[in-house]
Length: 238
Image 1 (cartoon, one colour):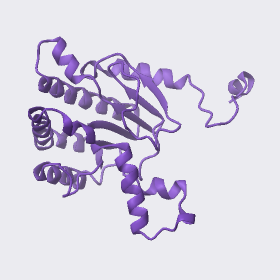
Image 2: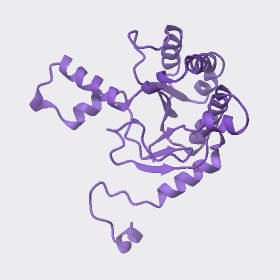
Image 3: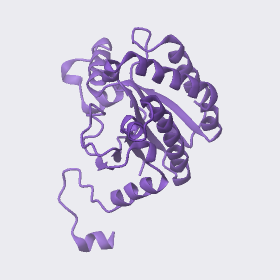
């Protein structure tokens, strides 16, 4: 397995169930993400992507949005060097350009973390921030137009190369927590043949054991990519 993608859902509900604020739930979610990244490093998974903040999340209450921006700022300032020391390379998947609503301080910290970790090779971590799958596809098409690509020259490979995930293989496995069973505008192009796994656990409670259960389920699935099923005999021979 090359790439596991995560939709980290349920931070707010986890907090509410414990009488905590939603922001406290997001703090707990960051800790869960750190633990999962370390588990992925141990298991030798070379690529991972985490849906951290969507283009739709700007609709949330201003106080929660501000708190999330401060949470990311503080994490990049205080904690991200630990991941760099572990061999993690950061890539931002999403629109953090100067015309985006992303605060300048957060954008600069993300850009610095990308540059500081560029030499690492153990795990490429895609932080999906101000990310929306449809928005990404629109930006990819705009990029092809700007490059002067003619209609007849447009191929699946060219579209894939214009996406934010150009250096990532498509996800083999997508894990969504909290029991919701939808993609929520997450990588609609890249997940065309991804195996989906929906875990009822709220993200802050998603741990190494839960990760291993998801990987075990994935290992039992037969990925056919449109081909006929492999016969039991051939599967055993393989």
